[in-house]
Amino acid sequence: REAADFYSVKHHVAALAALAGADLGSRPLAPVTAAQPGWQVGHSTTVGDIGDGWLAHFGLLNLALVRALGIEGRVFAGMFAILPERLPTGFGARRFVEFSGFPPALRDLALVVDENVPAAEVQVQLTAAANRTAGTAFAVERVSVFDVYRGAGLPAGKKSLAFSLVFRSAERTLTDDEVNTVFQRLQEDLVATAGFQIRK
Image 1 (cartoon, rainbow, N blue to C red):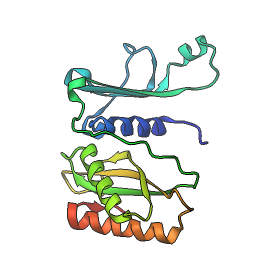
Image 2 (cartoon, one colour):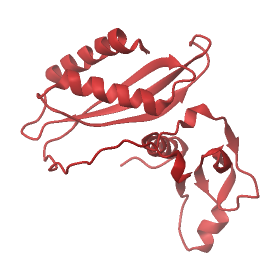
Image 3 (tube, helix red, strand yellow):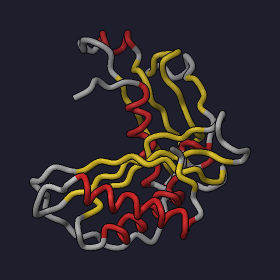
Image 4 (cartoon, rainbow, N blue to C red):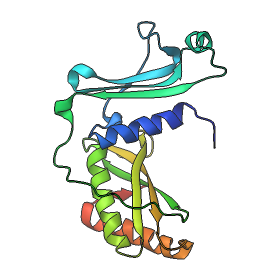
């Protein structure tokens, strides 16, 4: 497994936040200060404000604190806190699905969307479209956001959301051809029904 770093921790915190209906990309990143002693200044960041509903920290833990605890090396971590009233509603009961012993097929997809559209909303639409295009052939096991980009190469008022998709079958190993066919149909569906642009 690859060693953790700032960006991998950011990915996991962003994915957790998206499940709670929060878009880390909608708020500016701010460096931690000495007033937040658990984090290493210059190598950690904070996003949001709990007074506004949610707050996240991620990055490198304070090196002196880690040494004092007898832990060797650098430790990257993240945390996400949200007020109960800010949690999304309407989730129905979820049924347990038996784990598959077959390997997953992974695909990444970057979508260009309006700046004011939350990542969680796009994630819901992407998941629904992925399930439509996969049908009963195989399962869409997970859809998670791992990056938000703004800047050069994008039109004004737009942002790019990068998602990781995990496909898997409970009965067999998926072939590249069948996954690529569904992945191509998924992109066409998103452009036609949701109006998203695919970022190459």
